[in-house]
Image 1 (cartoon, rainbow, N blue to C red):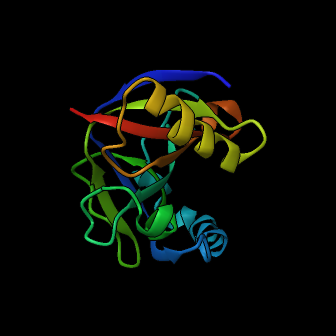
Image 2: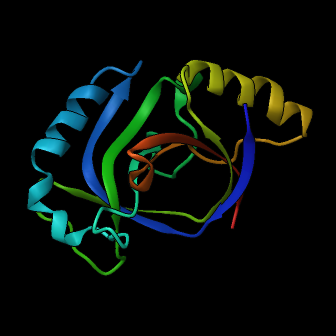
Length: 157
């Protein structure tokens, strides 16, 4: 499994928000967001092909400080959305977050989400004397047919 280091500046995301426990409700949240995406498509940052430049499963702790989920990464807020410009307003029923800038470990999820989590948190980070300093983020790359990457923040910038 390839682990890369990337720098992502502060990023604005507009999406549908839900408090999640043990992963329940994330699939329904994505269905809701995808069914209503046409309401906010004009607000999305676009890549040269006209697709959203980034789709996020953005996460934050209960206090909304963008810290890791609590109770062994099983509880927190989840925002199913897309990158947008900082100056846009979220329409009614949508939520706007501005994620802090972080240096992340970035791992492509090929098959097993939980295996990636375990490898990075239990093996890679301790071996490299790194600590998780923020919530783990899901990033779906539209230019790669929605390929999922997990982003593990280890330094706030």
